[in-house]
Length: 254
Ligand code: PGA
Image (cartoon, rainbow, N blue to C red; front, side, top):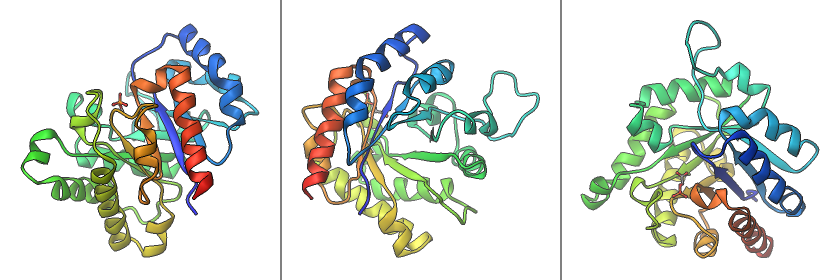
């Protein structure tokens, strides 16, 4: 059975001291919740401090981005090697990166390869925009993103996928559990075709987009959905704890 995962994407929020405060607020309770992988993804500048704070706990750490070169003259970038020393996961291909920073499928693909190459587990994000959704192109867009992101990659060790419809991110307008379940089912079928059925069955696929404490059960009760990538609600300790607790309860029952 797939272990559910709740990952908090803090995006470009929290100063170093705010990050420390937020972790301190939820660390003890979060650590005690079983049956679910709990991942927090603070900004780069707070990774080392947060790592110290969660050391020895069951809380896991992720970064929000990566560059694909190992080292060198790339001012301002963070390499896979640097991250592999600090955290276990890295979010790749988030729609904000694709849209504000022009990350193409080719770039996302290089980043996924680079992360896997140093043993980091990518949380690969895919999802359609509103106009694509309204034009009935969700399946086509998500399939294309998946195939380009995973091109030439034979070995997916630990890779996680997050289905995040762009129209649901930060808008308060989440997909329905049924919609998300359908698209995640499609993603799993794609993985099965590209790799094999067993890899597809073992792969964790999360939903992301306006997940909060009030709608978590709607998603976690769906058979294809293995957890959530949470943005805004992961910045509030009580919300994030509630989401993780609900995920643990639901999956404990299944
Ligand atoms: P949101 O963000 O929960 O604030 O909608 C989700 C994400 O972008 O990962």
